[in-house]
Image (cartoon, rainbow, N blue to C red; front, side, top):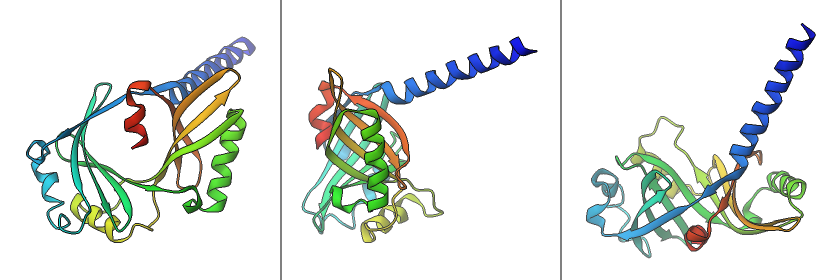
Length: 199
């Protein structure tokens, strides 16, 4: 019985280490290319018809991240930079807004910085985005309109590109936290997606 318990504990430890390794060591290898609006998913493209005369620019992209393909619309509205991502079928995946460090609530920022201080010798924020995932009863169009009209609404996640240093290891990492500052995942930003990650 004692041996069975020890074996279970050993298995649990290995399983947890594997999960941690997967959540921490995946690599961000995104590539994106600018595309004409005619190549953007038709239904998703129509969502932006009502704002084309209000935004500073509206650009469309095709994005690949490993085997995953998606489409992204980027625009600037009321001094905020938006990125709206869709699946290849035109289904909304998430909305991101670029923010500054000072815009993260202090208790949340403290928790994020505690994680960084615990896991790295040094870290520096390069890019911060609020991420919104539609967990409401609104359809995609309604949710996009709502976030555009209410950019201060509570987000679901923070996505942070940070320069990190551990021992002799110096990396650019993408880290995802919940809106309460709880760590979700981290992955290295590859050199091929460096410029894209910072945009």
